[in-house]
Image 1 (cartoon, rainbow, N blue to C red):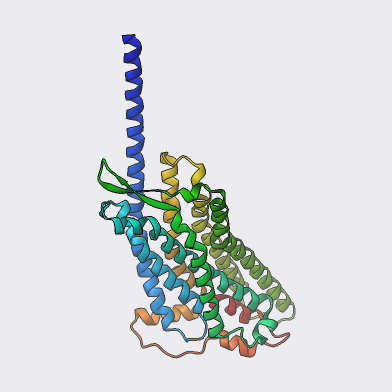
Image 2 (image 1 turned 120 degrees about the vertical axis):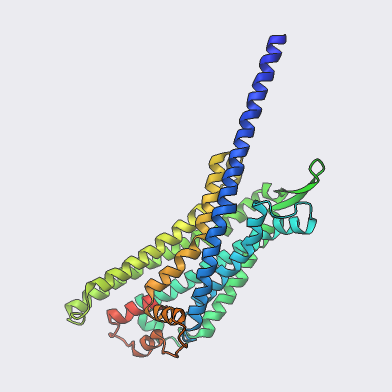
Length: 359
């Protein structure tokens, strides 16, 4: 009897050591990912987006509405992610009811809503880009197609949509008082166990991440294909003998890179949200994937700024003027030039290429 009791005690002790070791490893992964790496990414992203906003404000008021809205959303999402980082770095007071209530119900709801709105603004810009290249006659002949008011109405509608979609997320977590430690703990709310909430998660991810990813990839591929056809047709008619093919290749590569980066930054977070209730949350592997997904999703702040600088000559000139502290000069938007010059059978490659870059 004593032998079996000693063996059982030893096994229990070894299990305790193993669980304690795993718990420490998970805590280390979470700390390094969210308290060290993520703040660095957010800090660089915040600087990038502030420069981005300052650059976009130097551009003519016509156009660039979607980029301005997307950059503003990125800045707001960074600001609302600061409490998340502070909580995971143990820099908040877990005994404060209002603070822990905010962490549980509003913290990631608001931050993810702004991230989703930023993505939808990029989708709206890509749709305009696709229409201007693949259906230029209809697009440029439309009275409302290049209107700033139209773009602002679309951004406002997307704002209402995204926050309506994210509203049920406030039910995902709740706070629970721990009598032993005298602090509030954040736990999964009862709503997540209902099948209707699972359906909601799939619908939300389809609207905010999966749909935008598919649309951006497909539309950019169609744009690249249209540019190839335009270049080929105009080359045969000797309209582009003075234009190197490298320009079209550069545009195609940039559109492809835009699609790849968008998918790369958003896909891991999408998988995390879809399968969070079907995975072992107490494993180091899950914690590592969670940290990677959050870092990749926020790293979009880093990529966007450089992609804009590569894609748009007008943006580059405004950026150089900002860095050189030059006064902002009023320039005619290249999109307006394209809109006024575009006529049936006159959609030359370089005009459309400029449209692709400068939307």
